[in-house]
Image (cartoon, rainbow, N blue to C red; front, side):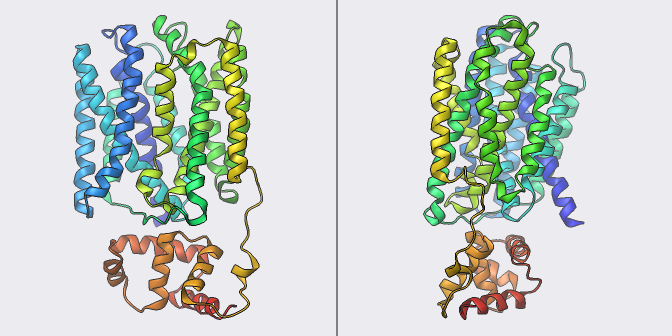
Length: 458
């Protein structure tokens, strides 16, 4: 029952955040009193504020210690977002709307980083974060489509936003979560992070040409002839669901390959852009590539975060990287290039992505198996070597390995262990459950038996 509640809570948290994320921009930027040229500029400026908000979470978490202080920081971010959004909704002044919305975007980025960090914690604990992402994303997109129609008024939207805001606040303020970062040198995770950053930026370039083109078209026509909020956006739902549930197969090994295949199909966008009758097809293709890109960097960075020195930054890293690439390409007027030039750059990026994925081992489907030396050492080993062998054998995170050492070498209670490690008792319980699940042990004595077997080289 507790697992079901945890999964429901994660779905509510992520769906509420994504719904607020998708609707806040439109209600603050697409207003009848804001000139079209300012709407396009505000989009990129809001992205800059979002990036700052994403990065601020790691800074605040490093400064503020203790569950109470972090709840206060979360409450402050929620309050600023709520006040800024409310002001942007009620005002009829373009300058006031812009200032309030910028503040709301800054705090929304901070909130988003909290949500992404929680999702990484869930994945580290063995929960199905991919499936949660797919279900929650789909629910958020469907809610926006129903309550924020492409044209006409949206009388229910403020109330749905308020309900989503309340639900998100309840989940974020109810409890805290924590990942104890590992060392970036371990398992070449530093290289994996760099590769993921490159691929994320390249994927952003794939989407930017058509994104900028259609963004300018819809502003120029007043969201009538061209409107990105129409039904083709619903094509993201099957992609999010498919990639979300696919993440549970072979620890997400298929995600990079499937995302790469979808991005290769995106090459058609610059070819079809000149044909008016292909508008609907191009819009569907555009949203499919967006869903694949977001799914890729969400799942990859969530999985990498616990292994890095700064998991609170790595968990959300995909968002600021993608947003920064979009802003840079927007200010560089990338969408104004010729179709031939855009296609050539996309092909170059596709080749780069294939090379980077190959170097990082993302194109290898076979899951790596522990070596004979790890799974069955030929002689007795030291305690540290035994723990290292167990870590590799059961794919334990650095935080779980530290806790495992305490569980098998002491008889201390969890409260004492938590105090010694400098974490909360809830964090110890959280990682202990994950260790039991991964090792198939049901008691502390079972863990000790595994440890002593490893010491004897068995």
